[in-house]
Length: 245
Figure 1: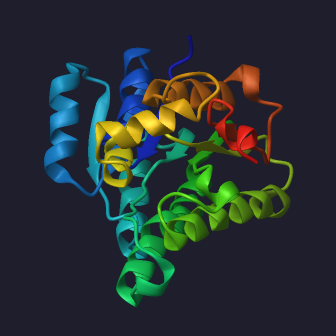
Figure 2: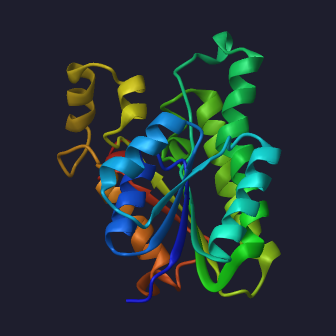
């Protein structure tokens, strides 16, 4: 197996952490970037792997992401796979949402995605991949609030435009759009066992999704088997979306 240089932005917890640990366990060189220094160092230490490397970044800051790109270039030279997993939300009704919440959500979930691809893309190897962790909420309009669904919907449009703008470069770009994945974010939106059980009953597969499910999709899209998949949104929801539509 050829060792690859992988960058996970938002890799210190939840889905991003699972992806980072999985790629690391396979022997790839993994740059784990996150704003939370304590969690970042904990992931690196507890992994027991010597091929995971921590980088602090505020994904919602252009200057911070540009600095990260410089550090990545100095450390690795090139990147094969970029995974953007940074994301925030809290449930707020549209009539109650304030500008600060809207602005912060867009800064991390959408602007940070733009900053990251803009900065890292010039470092990417031919044959590489960009995988964006989106959300099925952008399809349904539910879950996480209008600020969250709008930011994730923007990620869909950004991805599709990149397929056109970047041309024939042998780098595929796709979105993985999970719904109801066991994570810290799910705990924020559905804090009780009862609320999670109600969700589970809506899923034809009969269980909540896991970070491992998302990781498997990311590995497929960034590997040789998924190379012909380009400009697509892969919905991971156990069938829930279309059962209820």
